[in-house]
Amino acid sequence: MTGAARTRPRAHTRDVARAAVRAELAQVAFELFRRDGFDKVTLDDLAAAAGVSRSTFLRYFGTKEDAVLAAYDGHDRRTADALRARPADEDDWTALRRALGTLIDRYHQDPAGSLATTRLVQETPALYARHLEKQHGWRPALAEALAERAGTPGEVTLGHTVRAAAALDCLNVALDHWTASDGRLDLVDLLDEAFAALTGA
Image 1: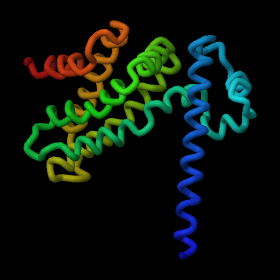
Image 2 (image 1 turned 45 degrees about the vertical axis):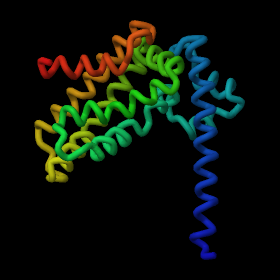
Image 3 (image 1 turned 135 degrees about the horizontal axis):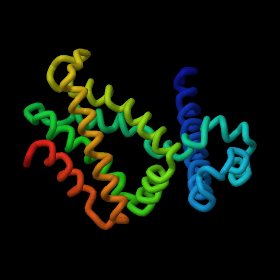
Image 4 (image 1 turned 120 degrees about the vertical axis):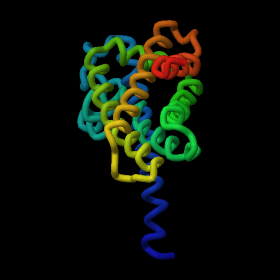
């Protein structure tokens, strides 16, 4: 066995262990924020509740906001990958709607947890602003995926960017209505309705 082959399993094990610790710290932070309020909880409070030092906590999350918004990590990549995988003869708007279904699936897997996280983000100005900032960064990934579907990789047009931005706005509006209903409304139906509103359907 080569040195590289021996290193890969160790690196994978470290990555899995780090991800597990990160998930545990995020859960502790989330419960503390829900109980005491996001603005009242300090980084020292989070570290103490998790049983780690402040510096250890900061190695996993640079800010309090990151500890909550880690739940959305990778959403841009997963959605862009799903978009690329849509049938070539599907129009961009339909493909975007179907690609966003990959995110909706995650809400269905844990509706109570997803509702609590979404509500915390929406009701906390600092979190909501940071979330929108991060989500703004999803646009380029989606627009590039649209360009690739059009057979012009690297040539993102204004239309690609506008459609990507509009799709994300539809997602946010659907989530707003879903949260306001305490999760009683169907998120799939809400997203369909939001997309249909921009096509006149």
